[in-house]
Amino acid sequence: MARVGRLAGSLLAETEGRYFLVGDLKEPCDFAAAGFEEPVQIPGRDLPFVRLRALREISLSAPRLVLDVEGEQLAKLLFTRFVIPRNGSVSNRLWRLVLGPEEEVDVDARWIGQMPAKVWDVVRDSVLRCS
Image (cartoon, rainbow, N blue to C red; front, side, top):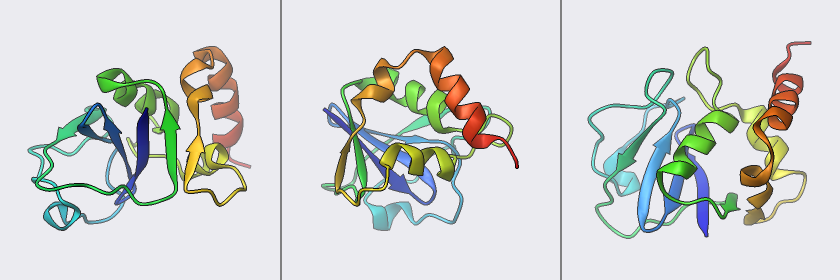
């Protein structure tokens, strides 16, 4: 099972012993303090994700999503589900929608990988619509 948390406003995915940073940073990030080597590039609108190299054991902070999609496929899925295409940053509204009202440490979000893209697009458009 893969787990997904947040790091400086981006998504941090742990899958099969690898780490992916998905979406642009929303604040400065001290990668070394977080346990990672500084990436050559930061993901965003034109670069959906980057693989991070862990310098030590990593503990993803809560809350975390738990998904059954693994590897680069997970990173691609997270980008299409959570990142706003026009600016490359993660939508906090979509993140909170998936977390739900519960204050759980690990949230079962396997349904994210099972939901058809067209259905998610309807949800996404509704959540991101400016009112």
